[in-house]
Length: 378
Ligand SMILES: NC(=O)c1ccc[n+]([C@@H]2O[C@H](COP(=O)([O-])OP(=O)(O)OC[C@H]3O[C@@H](n4cnc5c(N)ncnc54)[C@H](O)[C@@H]3O)[C@@H](O)[C@H]2O)c1
Image 1 (cartoon, helix red, strand yellow):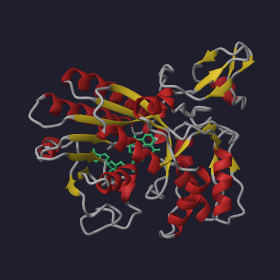
Image 2: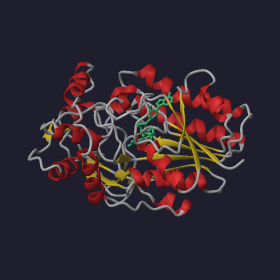
Image 3: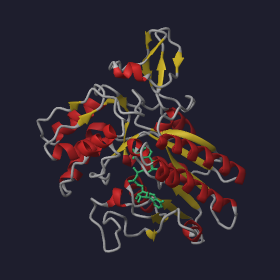
Protein backbone atom coordinates (compact mmCIF):
# COMPACT_ATOMS: atom_id res chain seq x y z
CA UNK A 1 0.00 0.00 0.00
CA UNK A 2 1.29 3.48 -0.89
CA UNK A 3 1.26 6.66 1.13
CA UNK A 4 -2.15 7.97 2.13
CA UNK A 5 -2.53 11.42 3.70
CA UNK A 6 -5.44 12.21 6.03
CA UNK A 7 -6.22 15.91 6.57
CA UNK A 8 -8.61 16.68 9.43
CA UNK A 9 -10.36 19.98 8.74
CA UNK A 10 -9.38 19.46 5.10
CA UNK A 11 -12.48 21.24 3.77
CA UNK A 12 -11.46 24.48 5.51
CA UNK A 13 -9.37 27.38 4.30
CA UNK A 14 -5.87 26.00 4.84
CA UNK A 15 -6.84 22.32 4.52
CA UNK A 16 -8.35 22.71 1.06
CA UNK A 17 -5.21 24.43 -0.26
CA UNK A 18 -3.01 21.76 1.30
CA UNK A 19 -5.22 19.10 -0.33
CA UNK A 20 -4.58 20.71 -3.74
CA UNK A 21 -0.83 20.95 -3.08
CA UNK A 22 -0.47 17.30 -2.04
CA UNK A 23 -2.67 15.99 -4.87
CA UNK A 24 -0.73 18.09 -7.41
CA UNK A 25 2.45 16.42 -6.11
CA UNK A 26 0.91 13.00 -6.85
CA UNK A 27 -0.20 12.00 -3.33
CA UNK A 28 -3.38 10.26 -2.26
CA UNK A 29 -5.39 12.49 0.12
CA UNK A 30 -8.51 11.94 2.22
CA UNK A 31 -10.25 14.81 3.98
CA UNK A 32 -12.10 14.36 7.27
CA UNK A 33 -14.36 17.32 8.10
CA UNK A 34 -17.64 17.94 9.94
CA UNK A 35 -18.34 21.04 7.80
CA UNK A 36 -19.00 23.49 10.65
CA UNK A 37 -21.79 25.88 9.66
CA UNK A 38 -19.94 28.95 10.97
CA UNK A 39 -17.09 28.24 8.56
CA UNK A 40 -18.93 26.95 5.51
CA UNK A 41 -22.27 28.79 5.51
CA UNK A 42 -21.13 31.38 2.97
CA UNK A 43 -19.49 28.98 0.48
CA UNK A 44 -21.04 27.36 -2.59
CA UNK A 45 -21.70 23.76 -1.60
CA UNK A 46 -22.88 20.46 -3.06
CA UNK A 47 -25.96 18.54 -1.89
CA UNK A 48 -24.00 16.95 0.96
CA UNK A 49 -22.63 20.26 2.17
CA UNK A 50 -19.06 19.97 0.81
CA UNK A 51 -17.66 23.24 -0.54
CA UNK A 52 -17.40 23.18 -4.35
CA UNK A 53 -13.77 24.36 -4.19
CA UNK A 54 -12.69 21.07 -2.57
CA UNK A 55 -10.48 19.05 -4.90
CA UNK A 56 -12.64 16.35 -6.58
CA UNK A 57 -9.75 13.88 -6.39
CA UNK A 58 -9.69 13.93 -2.58
CA UNK A 59 -11.43 11.16 -0.63
CA UNK A 60 -14.08 12.58 1.73
CA UNK A 61 -15.25 11.55 5.16
CA UNK A 62 -17.97 13.71 6.64
CA UNK A 63 -17.67 13.29 10.39
CA UNK A 64 -16.94 14.98 13.68
CA UNK A 65 -13.68 14.06 15.41
CA UNK A 66 -15.51 14.25 18.72
CA UNK A 67 -17.93 11.47 17.74
CA UNK A 68 -17.09 7.92 18.76
CA UNK A 69 -15.13 5.92 16.23
CA UNK A 70 -14.95 8.62 13.51
CA UNK A 71 -11.18 9.08 13.70
CA UNK A 72 -10.39 5.37 14.23
CA UNK A 73 -12.52 4.45 11.20
CA UNK A 74 -10.69 7.03 9.10
CA UNK A 75 -7.31 5.60 10.19
CA UNK A 76 -8.56 2.17 9.08
CA UNK A 77 -8.21 3.33 5.45
CA UNK A 78 -4.46 2.77 5.64
CA UNK A 79 -3.44 6.32 6.58
CA UNK A 80 0.34 6.80 6.63
CA UNK A 81 0.52 10.59 7.13
CA UNK A 82 -1.77 12.60 9.40
CA UNK A 83 -2.21 16.36 9.21
CA UNK A 84 -4.47 17.66 11.96
CA UNK A 85 -5.97 21.04 11.11
CA UNK A 86 -9.56 20.73 12.40
CA UNK A 87 -10.27 23.26 15.13
CA UNK A 88 -12.57 25.99 16.29
CA UNK A 89 -10.71 29.08 15.16
CA UNK A 90 -11.46 32.46 16.75
CA UNK A 91 -9.63 34.26 19.54
CA UNK A 92 -12.50 36.51 20.67
CA UNK A 93 -15.18 33.83 20.35
CA UNK A 94 -13.11 31.41 22.43
CA UNK A 95 -13.47 33.74 25.44
CA UNK A 96 -17.24 33.24 25.53
CA UNK A 97 -17.59 29.69 24.09
CA UNK A 98 -15.07 28.19 26.46
CA UNK A 99 -16.51 24.69 26.72
CA UNK A 100 -17.02 24.28 22.96
CA UNK A 101 -13.53 25.56 22.16
CA UNK A 102 -11.83 23.37 24.73
CA UNK A 103 -13.79 20.34 23.59
CA UNK A 104 -13.15 20.89 19.89
CA UNK A 105 -9.50 21.86 20.21
CA UNK A 106 -8.04 20.14 23.27
CA UNK A 107 -10.36 17.13 23.65
CA UNK A 108 -10.24 16.41 19.90
CA UNK A 109 -6.43 16.26 20.19
CA UNK A 110 -6.80 13.83 23.09
CA UNK A 111 -9.15 11.61 21.05
CA UNK A 112 -6.71 11.51 18.11
CA UNK A 113 -3.71 10.79 20.30
CA UNK A 114 -5.49 8.08 22.24
CA UNK A 115 -6.39 6.35 18.96
CA UNK A 116 -2.76 6.61 17.80
CA UNK A 117 -1.52 5.23 21.13
CA UNK A 118 -3.63 2.09 20.67
CA UNK A 119 -1.29 1.19 17.88
CA UNK A 120 -3.76 -0.37 15.37
CA UNK A 121 -2.79 1.94 12.55
CA UNK A 122 -0.19 2.64 9.90
CA UNK A 123 0.57 6.33 10.68
CA UNK A 124 4.28 7.11 10.20
CA UNK A 125 4.33 10.89 10.44
CA UNK A 126 2.17 13.66 11.90
CA UNK A 127 1.94 17.43 11.40
CA UNK A 128 -0.40 19.70 13.38
CA UNK A 129 -1.48 23.31 13.07
CA UNK A 130 -0.37 25.38 16.02
CA UNK A 131 -0.65 29.14 16.20
CA UNK A 132 1.35 32.31 16.82
CA UNK A 133 -1.30 33.13 19.42
CA UNK A 134 0.48 30.82 21.88
CA UNK A 135 3.33 33.35 22.20
CA UNK A 136 1.10 36.03 23.66
CA UNK A 137 3.17 39.18 23.10
CA UNK A 138 5.90 38.78 20.50
CA UNK A 139 9.61 39.21 21.13
CA UNK A 140 11.05 42.69 21.88
CA UNK A 141 14.38 44.42 22.44
CA UNK A 142 15.23 46.91 25.17
CA UNK A 143 17.00 50.20 24.25
CA UNK A 144 20.17 48.58 25.63
CA UNK A 145 19.85 45.75 23.07
CA UNK A 146 18.73 42.97 25.42
CA UNK A 147 15.98 40.59 24.25
CA UNK A 148 12.69 40.89 26.14
CA UNK A 149 9.60 38.70 26.38
CA UNK A 150 7.18 41.02 28.16
CA UNK A 151 3.97 39.97 29.88
CA UNK A 152 0.60 41.19 28.64
CA UNK A 153 -0.05 44.89 28.99
CA UNK A 154 -1.85 46.00 32.16
CA UNK A 155 -5.53 46.90 31.95
CA UNK A 156 -4.68 50.22 33.58
CA UNK A 157 -2.32 51.12 30.74
CA UNK A 158 -4.83 49.95 28.16
CA UNK A 159 -7.65 51.99 29.72
CA UNK A 160 -5.36 55.02 29.34
CA UNK A 161 -4.86 54.04 25.67
CA UNK A 162 -1.24 53.46 26.34
CA UNK A 163 -0.80 50.82 23.66
CA UNK A 164 2.97 50.27 23.29
CA UNK A 165 5.02 48.08 25.62
CA UNK A 166 7.49 49.32 28.17
CA UNK A 167 9.84 47.73 30.63
CA UNK A 168 11.05 49.67 33.68
CA UNK A 169 9.81 52.88 32.06
CA UNK A 170 11.69 52.28 28.79
CA UNK A 171 10.02 51.70 25.42
CA UNK A 172 10.50 48.23 23.94
CA UNK A 173 11.11 47.71 20.21
CA UNK A 174 9.28 44.78 18.54
CA UNK A 175 11.56 42.14 16.98
CA UNK A 176 10.91 39.00 14.91
CA UNK A 177 9.62 36.33 17.31
CA UNK A 178 11.62 33.12 17.61
CA UNK A 179 10.28 29.73 18.69
CA UNK A 180 12.38 29.99 21.86
CA UNK A 181 10.28 32.88 23.18
CA UNK A 182 8.45 31.77 26.35
CA UNK A 183 4.83 30.88 25.61
CA UNK A 184 2.28 33.18 27.24
CA UNK A 185 -1.10 32.40 25.65
CA UNK A 186 -3.70 35.05 26.46
CA UNK A 187 -6.99 33.57 25.26
CA UNK A 188 -8.80 30.23 25.57
CA UNK A 189 -8.08 29.58 21.88
CA UNK A 190 -4.36 30.19 22.45
CA UNK A 191 -4.32 28.04 25.59
CA UNK A 192 -6.08 25.27 23.63
CA UNK A 193 -3.51 25.55 20.81
CA UNK A 194 -0.57 25.42 23.23
CA UNK A 195 -2.05 22.38 24.98
CA UNK A 196 -2.72 20.69 21.68
CA UNK A 197 0.81 21.40 20.37
CA UNK A 198 2.41 20.05 23.56
CA UNK A 199 0.11 17.01 23.63
CA UNK A 200 1.01 16.10 20.05
CA UNK A 201 4.75 16.60 20.51
CA UNK A 202 4.85 14.64 23.73
CA UNK A 203 2.70 11.67 22.63
CA UNK A 204 4.29 11.62 19.16
CA UNK A 205 7.71 11.31 20.79
CA UNK A 206 6.53 8.60 23.17
CA UNK A 207 5.12 6.61 20.24
CA UNK A 208 8.19 7.18 18.06
CA UNK A 209 6.10 8.89 15.35
CA UNK A 210 7.90 12.02 14.05
CA UNK A 211 5.61 14.96 14.83
CA UNK A 212 5.88 18.58 13.73
CA UNK A 213 3.81 21.52 14.96
CA UNK A 214 3.64 24.51 12.66
CA UNK A 215 2.96 27.78 14.46
CA UNK A 216 1.00 29.63 11.81
CA UNK A 217 0.92 33.41 11.74
CA UNK A 218 -2.01 35.27 10.11
CA UNK A 219 -2.85 33.32 6.97
CA UNK A 220 -4.74 35.04 4.15
CA UNK A 221 -5.95 33.97 0.72
CA UNK A 222 -8.83 32.55 -1.27
CA UNK A 223 -11.45 30.33 0.40
CA UNK A 224 -11.17 32.05 3.77
CA UNK A 225 -14.71 32.25 5.18
CA UNK A 226 -15.80 35.80 4.33
CA UNK A 227 -18.93 35.86 6.47
CA UNK A 228 -17.34 34.46 9.63
CA UNK A 229 -16.73 37.53 11.83
CA UNK A 230 -14.60 35.63 14.33
CA UNK A 231 -11.50 34.83 12.34
CA UNK A 232 -9.28 36.05 9.50
CA UNK A 233 -8.62 39.77 9.65
CA UNK A 234 -8.24 40.15 5.85
CA UNK A 235 -11.57 38.39 5.22
CA UNK A 236 -13.31 40.42 7.94
CA UNK A 237 -12.01 43.71 6.47
CA UNK A 238 -13.05 42.70 2.95
CA UNK A 239 -16.58 41.87 4.14
CA UNK A 240 -16.83 45.33 5.71
CA UNK A 241 -15.49 47.13 2.64
CA UNK A 242 -17.74 45.26 0.22
CA UNK A 243 -20.69 46.33 2.36
CA UNK A 244 -19.43 49.95 2.15
CA UNK A 245 -18.44 49.97 5.80
CA UNK A 246 -15.00 50.94 7.12
CA UNK A 247 -12.89 48.13 8.58
CA UNK A 248 -13.06 48.21 12.39
CA UNK A 249 -9.60 48.48 13.89
CA UNK A 250 -8.85 47.94 17.58
CA UNK A 251 -6.39 50.19 19.50
CA UNK A 252 -4.76 52.68 17.09
CA UNK A 253 -4.31 50.22 14.21
CA UNK A 254 -0.51 50.43 14.40
CA UNK A 255 -0.17 46.97 15.92
CA UNK A 256 1.95 44.78 13.66
CA UNK A 257 1.19 41.29 12.42
CA UNK A 258 2.71 38.83 10.00
CA UNK A 259 0.37 38.06 7.07
CA UNK A 260 1.36 34.85 5.34
CA UNK A 261 -0.13 33.64 2.05
CA UNK A 262 -2.15 30.44 2.38
CA UNK A 263 -0.11 28.96 -0.51
CA UNK A 264 3.04 29.34 1.60
CA UNK A 265 1.28 27.71 4.57
CA UNK A 266 0.22 24.76 2.38
CA UNK A 267 3.76 24.45 0.98
CA UNK A 268 5.19 24.48 4.52
CA UNK A 269 2.90 21.63 5.60
CA UNK A 270 3.65 19.67 2.42
CA UNK A 271 7.39 20.12 3.03
CA UNK A 272 7.40 18.91 6.64
CA UNK A 273 4.92 16.05 6.17
CA UNK A 274 6.77 14.58 3.18
CA UNK A 275 10.23 14.94 4.69
CA UNK A 276 11.76 11.92 6.42
CA UNK A 277 13.61 13.76 9.19
CA UNK A 278 13.07 12.35 12.67
CA UNK A 279 11.86 15.40 14.60
CA UNK A 280 9.47 16.34 17.35
CA UNK A 281 9.48 20.10 17.30
CA UNK A 282 7.60 23.36 16.60
CA UNK A 283 8.38 25.83 13.78
CA UNK A 284 7.06 29.27 12.85
CA UNK A 285 5.33 29.70 9.51
CA UNK A 286 5.07 33.36 8.63
CA UNK A 287 6.16 35.74 5.90
CA UNK A 288 8.81 37.21 8.20
CA UNK A 289 7.48 40.72 7.40
CA UNK A 290 5.73 43.03 9.85
CA UNK A 291 2.67 44.88 8.52
CA UNK A 292 0.39 47.11 10.56
CA UNK A 293 -3.30 46.37 10.73
CA UNK A 294 -3.96 49.90 9.37
CA UNK A 295 -1.72 49.25 6.35
CA UNK A 296 -3.55 46.02 5.65
CA UNK A 297 -6.92 47.84 5.83
CA UNK A 298 -5.66 50.64 3.50
CA UNK A 299 -4.23 48.12 0.98
CA UNK A 300 -7.54 46.28 0.79
CA UNK A 301 -9.58 49.49 0.45
CA UNK A 302 -7.31 50.63 -2.39
CA UNK A 303 -7.53 47.30 -4.21
CA UNK A 304 -11.32 47.17 -3.80
CA UNK A 305 -11.52 50.80 -4.96
CA UNK A 306 -13.34 51.90 -1.81
CA UNK A 307 -12.66 55.31 -0.37
CA UNK A 308 -13.00 54.08 3.19
CA UNK A 309 -10.32 54.63 5.82
CA UNK A 310 -10.31 52.16 8.71
CA UNK A 311 -12.42 53.17 11.71
CA UNK A 312 -9.97 53.28 14.59
CA UNK A 313 -11.89 52.13 17.67
CA UNK A 314 -9.30 53.25 20.19
CA UNK A 315 -10.34 50.27 22.32
CA UNK A 316 -8.58 47.15 23.47
CA UNK A 317 -10.01 43.71 22.76
CA UNK A 318 -9.26 41.44 25.71
CA UNK A 319 -6.69 38.82 24.75
CA UNK A 320 -5.13 40.88 21.91
CA UNK A 321 -1.39 41.40 21.84
CA UNK A 322 0.39 44.47 20.49
CA UNK A 323 2.96 43.13 18.01
CA UNK A 324 3.96 39.71 16.81
CA UNK A 325 5.71 38.72 13.57
CA UNK A 326 7.78 35.68 12.76
CA UNK A 327 11.43 34.85 12.70
CA UNK A 328 11.26 32.17 10.00
CA UNK A 329 14.87 30.98 10.13
CA UNK A 330 14.26 27.77 12.09
CA UNK A 331 12.01 26.27 9.40
CA UNK A 332 14.51 27.37 6.77
CA UNK A 333 17.42 25.75 8.59
CA UNK A 334 15.47 22.59 9.51
CA UNK A 335 13.65 21.96 6.22
CA UNK A 336 15.10 24.42 3.69
CA UNK A 337 11.67 26.08 3.55
CA UNK A 338 11.23 29.76 2.72
CA UNK A 339 7.92 31.57 2.04
CA UNK A 340 7.78 32.73 -1.61
CA UNK A 341 4.65 34.86 -2.03
CA UNK A 342 4.73 38.65 -2.12
CA UNK A 343 2.20 40.52 0.08
CA UNK A 344 0.97 43.03 -2.54
CA UNK A 345 0.53 40.35 -5.18
CA UNK A 346 -1.14 38.09 -2.61
CA UNK A 347 -3.62 40.82 -1.66
CA UNK A 348 -4.42 41.43 -5.34
CA UNK A 349 -5.09 37.73 -5.81
CA UNK A 350 -7.31 37.70 -2.71
CA UNK A 351 -9.35 40.61 -4.00
CA UNK A 352 -9.70 38.93 -7.44
CA UNK A 353 -11.06 35.82 -5.73
CA UNK A 354 -13.44 37.82 -3.53
CA UNK A 355 -14.80 39.60 -6.61
CA UNK A 356 -15.83 36.21 -8.02
CA UNK A 357 -17.84 35.38 -4.85
CA UNK A 358 -21.35 36.36 -3.72
CA UNK A 359 -21.21 39.53 -1.61
CA UNK A 360 -20.49 38.41 1.97
CA UNK A 361 -22.69 39.49 4.84
CA UNK A 362 -20.89 41.75 7.29
CA UNK A 363 -21.28 40.70 10.92
CA UNK A 364 -18.29 42.54 12.37
CA UNK A 365 -20.47 45.23 13.95
CA UNK A 366 -22.63 42.61 15.76
CA UNK A 367 -19.52 40.75 16.79
CA UNK A 368 -18.10 43.95 18.30
CA UNK A 369 -21.35 44.55 20.25
CA UNK A 370 -21.25 40.95 21.50
CA UNK A 371 -17.70 41.52 22.79
CA UNK A 372 -18.82 44.76 24.50
CA UNK A 373 -21.77 42.98 26.15
CA UNK A 374 -19.39 40.31 27.45
CA UNK A 375 -17.07 43.07 28.72
CA UNK A 376 -14.30 41.87 26.44
CA UNK A 377 -13.61 45.34 25.08
CA UNK A 378 -11.85 47.94 27.24
N1 LIG B 1 -6.09 30.77 9.39
C1 LIG B 1 -5.10 31.22 10.16
O1 LIG B 1 -4.61 32.35 10.01
C2 LIG B 1 -4.52 30.34 11.24
C3 LIG B 1 -3.51 30.88 12.06
C4 LIG B 1 -2.98 30.08 13.06
C5 LIG B 1 -3.41 28.76 13.20
N2 LIG B 1 -4.39 28.28 12.39
C6 LIG B 1 -4.81 26.88 12.58
O2 LIG B 1 -4.85 26.22 11.31
C7 LIG B 1 -5.90 25.27 11.30
C8 LIG B 1 -6.78 25.47 10.08
O3 LIG B 1 -7.31 26.79 10.13
P1 LIG B 1 -8.26 27.36 8.99
O4 LIG B 1 -8.05 28.82 8.96
O5 LIG B 1 -8.12 26.56 7.76
O6 LIG B 1 -9.69 27.11 9.66
P2 LIG B 1 -11.09 26.75 9.00
O7 LIG B 1 -12.12 27.08 10.03
O8 LIG B 1 -11.22 27.32 7.63
O9 LIG B 1 -11.00 25.16 8.84
C9 LIG B 1 -11.16 24.28 9.91
C10 LIG B 1 -11.96 23.09 9.39
O10 LIG B 1 -12.07 22.14 10.46
C11 LIG B 1 -13.38 21.61 10.45
N3 LIG B 1 -13.65 21.12 11.80
C12 LIG B 1 -13.71 21.84 12.95
N4 LIG B 1 -13.97 21.05 13.99
C13 LIG B 1 -14.05 19.78 13.52
C14 LIG B 1 -14.29 18.53 14.11
N5 LIG B 1 -14.54 18.41 15.42
N6 LIG B 1 -14.29 17.42 13.33
C15 LIG B 1 -14.07 17.53 11.99
N7 LIG B 1 -13.84 18.70 11.37
C16 LIG B 1 -13.83 19.82 12.12
C17 LIG B 1 -14.25 22.77 10.01
O11 LIG B 1 -15.50 22.33 9.47
C18 LIG B 1 -13.38 23.45 8.97
O12 LIG B 1 -13.62 22.96 7.67
C19 LIG B 1 -6.62 25.38 12.65
O13 LIG B 1 -6.10 24.40 13.50
C20 LIG B 1 -6.21 26.76 13.15
O14 LIG B 1 -6.23 26.82 14.56
C21 LIG B 1 -4.96 29.02 11.41
